[in-house]
Every structure is written in C-alpha cells, then in structure tokens.
Amino acid sequence: MVAIGMPGAHPAQDPAAPARRGWGARIGDFFGLSSSWTRPRPPLERRDLVLVAAVMGVGLFALELVRSVGAFEDTTAPVWGQWLAVASGALLLLWRRRHPLTVGILAATHMFVVGVTMPMVMGQMTLQVAYFIALFSAVAWARDRRLMLLVVSGIVLFMAGWLLWQFTLGSGVQEILDSIKGRRRWGAFSPVTAGVLLTFLINLIFFGGAIGGGQFSWRSARQRARLAEQAETITSQSAALQRQAVLDERLRIARELHDVVGHHVSVIGVQAGAARRVLTKDPTTATGALEAIEASSRDAVNQMRGLLGTLRDIEGSMPVDGSAEAGHRAPEPHIPDLPTLVAARRAAGLDVSYDLVESPEGAAEALPGPVSLTVFRIAQEALANVARHSTATRASLVVRVRTEGPSPHAEVEVLDAGRPRPGTSGSGLGQLGIRERAQSLGALVDIGPRATGGYRVRVRIPLGESHVRHGE
Image 1 (cartoon, rainbow, N blue to C red):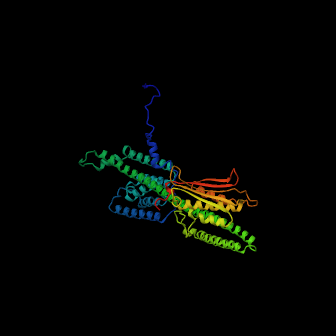
Image 2 (cartoon, rainbow, N blue to C red):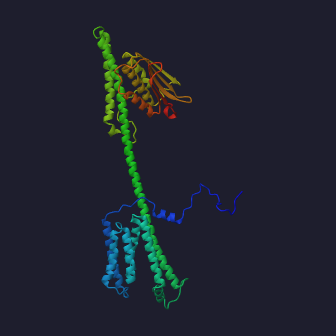
Image 3 (cartoon, rainbow, N blue to C red):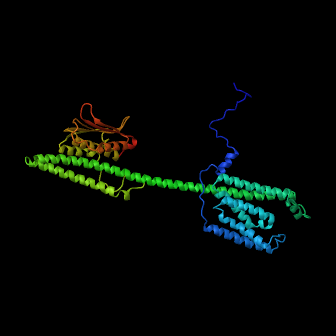
C-alpha cells in the first residue's frame, strides 16, 4: 500500500542520483569560499610602476585632447582638480595587488565622487580602465574570499543604487529628454527606456566583466599553484624513491658481502685447522688444505672487489628508476653453481649431500635471476652456519623447483643433525639476511631446531607466471 497525503510521506529518491545544490553553494564554489588556498601577496614590482605611469600619462594626455575640442565647457571644476582626479585614479593601481580590497573600495569611492562633481571627467576612457582594473584586482588578488565577496557585493549594490537614484530622483531622465528635444524618434523603444536600459547594460558588462575576469584569474592562479605543488611533490617523491633504491642496493650488497665473507672465511678456517694438524705428519694433505685456502681466499677477494666496486659507484651509476642494475658486476651465482658450493664445503670437511628435484626437467634453469640467486645465497649461508655453529659433520641440501601445477614454487632446505657448538652463538645477521631475502620475494621461512634433533633452514618461494622465463 502507498500512503497518499499522509504527513512524512515523501517520494522515494534514487540514492545514486546526485544531490541538487542550491545557488548559494554554486556561488560559493565559483568564488572559492571554501578553498583553503591563499594567493600569495606579491611585492611592488616594476610592472606596477609601468602600469600606473601608462594609465596616468595616457589619461592626462587624453584629458587635454578632450578639453581642446570643447567637451568640458559645462564642467565647472578647475583644471587642476580634473588633473588630480585622473592622476589619483591611476595612482590607486600601484597597490592593487598588495591591498586589493582597499584599492577596490577607494576606486568605487573615487568613481562616485568624481562622477558627482565632474561627470565628464569620470567618463573618460582611462579612468574607466582604472576602475575596471581596480575591481578586477579586488576579485583576483583578495586573500579572504568571503570578505572579497562582501566588499564586491557592496560596491555593486552601491553603484546600482546610484544609477537608480540618478534615473528616479536625479537628473538622468531629464538629461535624456533634453538631448532628444526636437528630434524625430527612430528606434523601437522610447528614448527614456532605451537610455535607461542601455546604461544598465553597459554597467552590467562593465562590472560583470571585471568580477568574472578577476575570479577566472584567481582560479587560474590556484590551478597553477596546485600544479606547481604537485610537480614539487613528484620531484621530492622521485628523489626519495631514488634514495630508497640506493639504500636497498646498499643493503643488498651488505647481504652479499656477509654471505661471501661468511662462506669463504668458514672454509678457510676449517682448512687452516686441518692443515695445522697434519702439517708435520702428512705434508701432502696439508698442501692440499693450503691450496684450498688459497683458492677460497682468491675467490672471496674477487667477489668482494666486485661488490665494493659497485658500492663505490652506486650513486653515480644508479638509475633514476631505482633498478638494481648499477655499476659493473661480476656474474652472480645461481642454482647451477650449487654443486661447486657443495664441493667446496666437502673439501672443507663438511659432508654435504645435494639433491635437485625439478618438475618439469630444466625448471631450475628457467627461474629468473633474483629467485635463483636467492636460493643459492640461502643455501650458502645455511651451510656456512652449519660449519660455524654446529657440531654436525654431515648436512643435506635439497632444492625443489616446481613450475607446473596448482602451487608452483622454488624451495631450498638445509638439514643437519648436530647440536649448537659452544661459544659460537653468532651475531644473527646471517639468519636476518635469509629472512630479508625471503621477504623480498614473498617466501615462507622455517628456521629453527628440529623436533628430532638438529637444525632446519627451509625457504619456499612462490612462483607465478612472471617468475618463470619461458622459451629462454
């Protein structure tokens, strides 16, 4: 049932329909009454002086030209007063941008006083231009938009009242009748009606043009300020992104250095201990251990030299877009290099088994560089931690790569059955580096003691279409 004529019954409104806005809200939007932007107040500039000098010079010259043709024969004001009226009207424009509302009020007062005492002087083109510019500037440069609207509305209402007074109580109508006395009527309107309408039309265009043009200037200035602010924000954000990219690259290099140094130093330490124990008993074995130390140290120096070179040139060669391809790097290790890593660990005395499980065949080689490098570095750090901090003599390394099926992933797992070695707690930076690497790829991390004894490091990196290189 539909209630008809009942109090409170209203037709249903479409919630998606835009709410109608009243004239007050539209006027407020047009004049920017709710805008928080304030137009900066400029200092006096050379162009202000040039404008005043131009209006004053042209105005005084035109005044004398009009006087020379006898147009001021009915004007009783002295010549110096006429000159003062033109000069003072032009001089007001000097402060039109610094004190726009004050200049607007003074210009309206000037128009009224000169119009009452010297109407022919007030009607001069240069003074009309000065009044127009003053009102235009009041709207364009006023900082308080509500006060501007109040002042400009007062000026318009005052001028409209002055016109009404001239045509109702003043001599405006009589002047029109005197000017057409004895002449034939030509137009469609009576002379009085035409004169009144024409006067109001001219004033409507004059004041409407000044107010509309001034508001357009203010809105344009606000738009330019917003664009400049946005450009500054974009520039600062770009600089911040560049700094963040440099910081990320430095952190990446720090992790690389930690992994490289940790791996090679642990190898060197184990080989040095072995060489010391058999140096007098088995020189051949000691020589092999020393050769392993030499190779490992040379490899470490080469890798650190490349990383430090990148770090040295990072700010000069870092692209603005923040990409990590800065400087000249040596080839980074990947999953195919894991057998070499395992061999080095075996040579250092840690029995490491390695298994690569792929689905399909060749999936590991199809992984992109960042994923493959992350798998290698995690395996390298985990095996180094076994050698440094565990009593285990054996460890297993398993890499699983699956690029097909419902959950493609790359997983690296390092297991050992040892116990923590006393006095080798470490700084924790190695595991922190593993977690940071995993976090950068959205991986799942499982690091900690096993329930059956020993320690596990397992990281699973999810793969999507963008993580697999097809046809390469």
